[in-house]
Length: 390
Image (cartoon, rainbow, N blue to C red; front, side):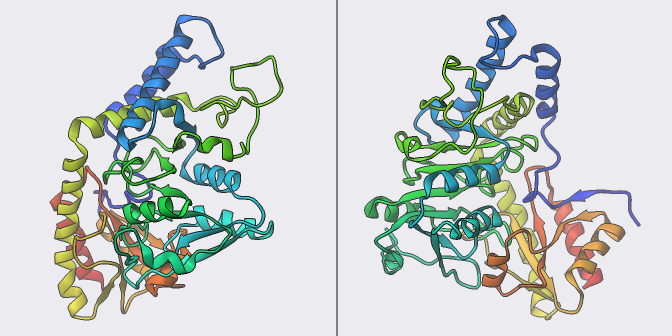
């Protein structure tokens, strides 16, 4: 039994957060406290400036058109539901990868009852979707009623990065809407809406952006909002003389009271990413992942574990899943925590389609996911623990 905690579940939520994140939330609740658009006094204006600043930072991070096209929600799941259910109509068809999270698949399965269909683009057993420039290989999946491609940027199960740039070019050429789920890449990998032809980008604040839980959102290219029905209607603090929802951004999609303490925390997380540099953060996580993969290879070669996804650093994030060959994954994860203080995630990771692609359904895997505050010593301890139990 150990009292030391080694947190390796950053794909679920990053931990710890920069000290500036809870400090910013406390400062807002202590010294500002007001809503935006609901008061004509200084603290309400301060809240408005804070929210605008975070919209601006997100716009710059993601290469968005302008801050008005940034919409705040509770999380990336809510964002994807608003985009998917707001955009699609009965009779529409969409393409998804076979590596999608249930945040994409469950809304689409619900919409099947309304006459909306989807096709899974088959990924390889390492989670990759092999396409060439412009992804002409995907043309055979198109139908007359295909409206969009909805895809994760990187797998939350095995870390494999999907070809977002090529898919974006394919969508632009074929007049499709491209919606990208950046839950695993925002704040970790470069994402540029303009360069990658992304029409709708969904993000969450509590993973690579290092903010708190309960805040996320989406960005839209200009003009797309007119095609998306608002799923939630209510007070916006604007044009209050009418009972019709505003048609301008971001009010079109932001009803009710925003999570302003969460936005303040997200702003602090974004500043941490800016100050430390996206490239440096990415390289740090790649370094840790490389050490871990190198240390796993002898166990894999001895037949004691199976490594999922890519075996090297090319085209992957700091998410590594494995299956012990002689031990149930759940028991292995329990022992890692109870005996060594190593916290991982075990199971199907809300992504059964991805596990079917990887050949790990229904048993699932143990997932190790590295973050900006992990160290090489954490990796060494995790490897030693694995060698002791598998």
